[in-house]
Image 1 (cartoon, chains in turn cyan, orange):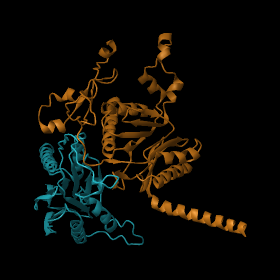
Image 2 (cartoon, chains in turn brown, cyan):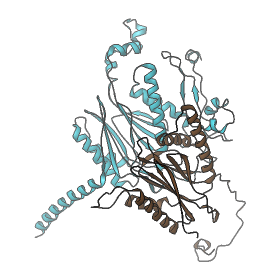
Image 3 (cartoon, one colour):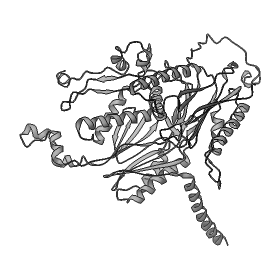
Image 4 (cartoon, chains in turn red, cyan):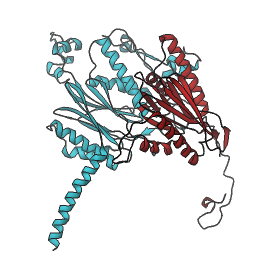
Length: 237
Length: 336
């Protein structure tokens, strides 16, 4: 490819020469793309993800959603390296079952978040390359969102975007849900229908500008009645 | 060595082998190795019941090379959160701890509302800086160990003891990229001298061999009061009157050194801490958003409401504007 690097200082083309064998390190990580988003309301929580699985220039699958149902009141969204996502969800499922069998009750969202933090930190020196966001209802029935970094630091939020398009979506959510950087605006609480519409709009924007996001959108709406799923098509290019 | 035998102390080798010492029994199962990992330290104190020091720590990744050198380690494809301004100082009314609330990962603000000051117990708060996940987990581990100590020994561990415990727990991870710099801000309760004498083994027998090592009553009393100790994962453990940690600390030190004195009253101290964090967040890109403030006294810690510094910035600009107006007016008069 023609670029400035091929030309030396005098303007003449630099000549190719054999620089010796180059060693390519095996990297145990791969980046499979995808975006996850979670919003908490007064009595509901929404976890949404796109369904594209990509690697480099290829798309491996158009139907690989990144929301995983953990319990009747908790959904986990994880994006990043798909291999680590699968293993992590298997481990979490096993731990949930163990807890159910030992304590005779299902884990609450807060407890799952704390457990996930320790699971991630136990691999501090060879981390799971996964960006997690948990969305669900807490013990009082209010919506809760817990966002994680790949080594286990976590925080309870009202809304959070993670994954490849997170840097594009987070400012938009800050403005629309958090009313940040808007002066003299009335803070209206978010209703479920408005939140779902906002999530759809936000993902459509993400699919426009992020190559790793697209194909379809899977939304999981968690309420005390249960978990409702919706599928909306997005750009496939 | 004889002393080691009396204390049942097994000298632990360097961190390269320490985790695997105990992991030989947890055979090959993925779950137990990565999740249920325990280090059973054999250090027991003479006085306490024979409960070994047990805590869960992450296992170091098994590498063929002996040292945890960075060239052989797996390169992380993502940045971890770093960057902060935290400060603490002692004055006549106790200890003030203040911090900003921004967590940055690379060039992105990962979270604008993080809690960097965490209470450990009613008379100790700890400000954290360094890597977010490391600080969060080590604070949790420290809280658990302090609570266990309190349950076993029926008294609360002193701030200096807490700092030493934390330093010992972090020592095996020296050289790895665990990055933790905590400032313990607390108030040691003045225990009744009778209890203190009992626990420290002070006796009435004043024979020369005993009196030399025995602390005098005046010494016992100065164990209580406000304390500020800085512990870091490199192994540093320092007691002092003023500490500021993080990328914004030079700016905070500048503001603090100007006005800090022992005789400040509570409102002045709080304003000073707030001002220091505000100036640091103004100049340091990796600090910002809000300021958290804690005040620790003999009654315990009290948290001031989290304050958004955006308002403070506008107030400051207004004040500057007024000053500038006065100055330009004066200058204009002179010019005429």
